[in-house]
Amino acid sequence: MQEFFSGIGDSLYKLLIVENRWEMLLEGLGITLFIALISTILGTVLGFLVGIVRSTYDLQLKGKKCRKFSDYLLKALDVVARIYVTVIRGTPVMVQIMIMFFVVFATAQDGVFPAILTFGINSGAYVAEIMRSGIMSIDKGQFEASRSIGFDYKRTMIYIILPQAIKNILPALGNEFIVLLKETSVACYVSVQELTFTGNMIASRTFDIFTSLIAVAAIYLVVVLVISYLLKLLERRLHNSDH
Amino acid sequence: MITDNVLIKVDNLTKSFGDLHVLRGINAEIDRGDVMVVIGASGSGKSTFLRCLNLLEEPSGGTITFEGVDITDDSVDINKHRQKMGMVFQQFNLFPHMTVLNNLTLGPVKLLGQSKVEAEKNAMRLLERIGLAEKANAYPNQLSGGQKQRVAIVRALAMNPDVMLFDEPTSALDPEMVGEVLEVMKQLAREGMTMVVVTHEMGFAREVGTNIVFVDEGVIVEQGEPGEFFGNPKNPRLKDFLSKVL
Ligand SMILES: Nc1ncnc2c1ncn2[C@@H]1O[C@H](COP(=O)(O)OP(=O)(O)OP(=O)(O)O)[C@@H](O)[C@H]1O
Ligand SMILES: [Mg+2]
Image 1: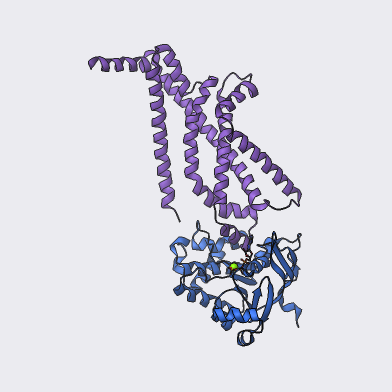
Image 2 (image 1 turned 90 degrees about the vertical axis):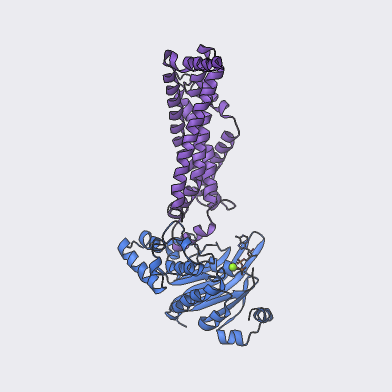
């Protein structure tokens, strides 16, 4: 028994203390969080715009004939948006990041920027669908009431539809952030020194893959739990102001 | 006839949804101060007709002239004209994320350029009128159905419209709340508001209607002032309909 515990102590000592490896893990976590955060922002902005295009097309033009130049423009944007969403959601993020790193940014020294771009673009496709379904789920009567008062489509969106839609999709957006945070681990394959990569690197020095992988998994888990908790708090706050 | 007095003129209005010909040539004239009550069986096209009047449905053919302007013309800015046509829905459609007061002031502030103070003063006056001033800061989900519908009516009135369109405003209400909503509408009619009302409330039609219109399969088959209309219906389909609802 004593041997077992001293064995764990020894493993942890090698994992964390030797060469100040805990600092390396912390740095890795920092990069993971940084990539997740920036690409969530990028993905949300991108997804927001694409979702607006998709739902505007669905609401305004679907099943009708194009008449004005702006109709054709909207139709073209919708086709592009649809291709984007289909391709991104239909291919593995692993392949996407490799294409970004080895093809698009073949000369890049550092993988962080390509990684952010990949995850941002990837997440944007999912956020776009969340956004679109959020808008489409608002009762048609809300549009009609607003239009009957005399608001045009744009102002109806801004004053009436989006405030309701965004509030409804916040939980899904929070979930998307958590998914993305875990997904960033594939960036280790393009040598971004994020958490998973750091764990691997330490394992290659300690020859103790088990301990470092478990440690890395535990760190992800704790971070996800903390974020989930914060999101729940936020949700409750919103729910209390629910009307 | 003083053509000046005509507020809305509908000429040969048609509307199809794909192969379904819902309106098949409607002609109507609504004078200022008229209360036109539209009745008919379910699916006959009453709502579609009403929704064509402010172009919530786009007509397939025919014209609608509102205050002398053909609003079916593509070059017309329909949003401007809609400001003058209030609409009240069966499902109320209040904005759930805004207080009652903000429901009333949004349009006047953003579209009519009223100051917030001015719009709120006006809104409070309207809320007082329907006895709901103390609900100004409540949210719609804190109101009963009857209260919601009365708020919806004054939300439309806050825009100072020239005509009010009602699509079965009491059909979604519990029976005990129908009266309070009809009362507001009657008062409005007495004050001379031009109204087009789709309803199954025959008592209301008789009492305040100036012109009753029976729609059947997308055309107006009979119309007249309430006494003659209810007292001496001619069309067999109307007779049949009335025998069922009266
Ligand atoms: N957006 C739409 N798309 C397809 N069909 C429609 C649409 N709106 C209405 N219809 C059809 O048009 C017909 C007339 O509908 P409308 O709502 O005008 O009837 P209504 O007289 O108001 O009936 P009710 O008393 O039930 O409200 C119905 O057969 C309905 O199914
Ligand atoms: Mg109807």
